[in-house]
Length: 310
Image 1 (cartoon, helix red, strand yellow):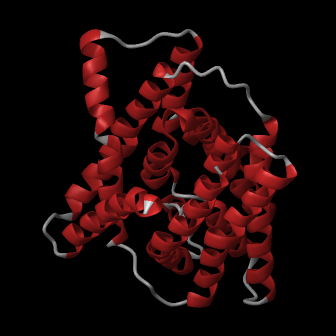
Image 2: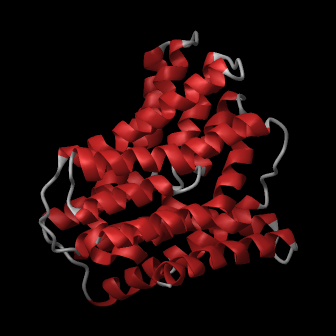
């Protein structure tokens, strides 16, 4: 019952967004505008306010990052191997499929879910992971793709750095970390305004995610999409579970946040990367939709296991 109470509102908001877009009750412009508001304003403000207001002095645990990104490497590698050996896909396509397997929907679903489950205690490990998630994952994907490409690596590296440094989430993490370190907490009217904006982040993020799902279709290449979905919803969180709980034996909250982070469905960024390189667009877009639908069940199962561990 506890798991249901946590997950039901989350997926209800996603369904409401999908239904509104599917029925054309709202237009594509609304979907685009709401998504941009969430990504550029609401979630960044939520991150800054959460970091600024937390008084936790929890130490940085290197094995926490090793647990998560080690599992990413495992899921990524298995997916690349399967798509290459079983489906005979080219190098670039195997890399993008592997990236999709280890690229979670962090902003639109991860932040609302993890903060709802762990509250303030989960904010530190959550944002510690978010702080380096984008540069590591995007950097790794671009590096592996360029190993089989002709464009100079340093040219691509400049683009990656520029993309990361102008990302609203990354900027919010920097500002929030600064406020947290110097114990600067917004007060008065400024605090009221920022808290009002931050309060809209979770609901708007989930509704906009539902709207965005209406754009994806279960098309051809379901074999490849299935490999991605299995890697994302089963292999990735299972690898994090083993590393976090049994290999490195992290504190329960840290281990739980890492596992929940990994249980999330394929992130929209994976499709954007496939669209940018004009490779694996169909299987990745299918995987985004399928994994999000199936995550209704998979996230609930993983969450039940985590709650029993407490």
